[in-house]
Image 1 (cartoon, rainbow, N blue to C red):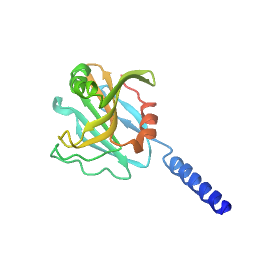
Image 2: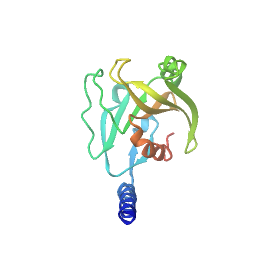
Image 3: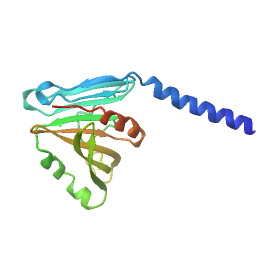
Image 4: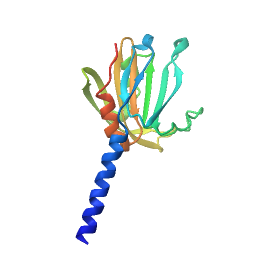
Length: 175
């Protein structure tokens, strides 16, 4: 029984190591040059979908997810969970963070100052509204960075991707 348990433990450990190695080498995400040329490395097993490229003075939005990106709903009240969301807003960081003040005051979201790859940001962690309803929430992590006169948001919608999220933020670069 002990041998069988040790073999299973070793197999589980080997599988976890293989899954991490399979993500290497990473791919580079590169945002538009006129929006701060945001870049970072992400797992090669993930796919990228750019919903809006930020032209015509609109906000930039992209989604990353393992294997294939799920459909991005056109109705914003219907949400989809993604491993990573990237947005570059044409708004100040103070304005964007203001949207989270109530959740921070209520203790649903924690806020902290962070530095990744020499870039300072604000990290929020906790329960975020998911489908336009306060009753429907998702536990996630979002980090905001000031990029010139814009705000960069990088968010994960699941604790499952926390390790990848932290690695991605560790490679972030922008002007």
